[in-house]
Length: 134
Image (cartoon, rainbow, N blue to C red; front, side):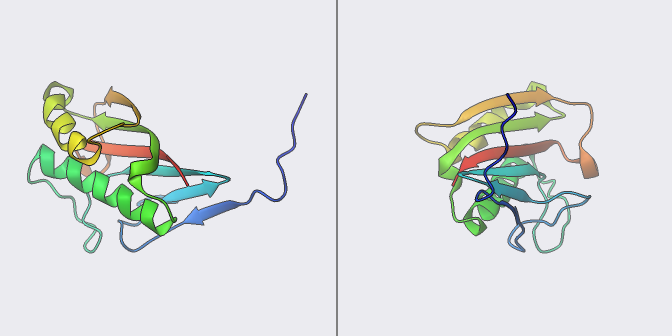
């Protein structure tokens, strides 16, 4: 049986200058019902749009700070994340990514997947997306 979406549940595009703008035809996030679907966040500086490439720890933190800014603009918090996916070109250095990630989720962390990839946009070494409760 096909279900028709309720007309009172709107799909809302979320965009904020506090996080890097989309570098393609996508939105920073979409809020639908009680969920926020955040696009992958690269370690880009929100003001300059430039790739932060000091080290993998700093890159991971920047991705999470960018996601946190999108969440805040949508009226929620990264603390309410249900699931994150981490994409990295350096899966062998995942312990470094994991340590930075743990700083954001000290207790009751969300579900998570980690995926090793050959390449990411702009030469980034890490990208993180999220599904967050609103």
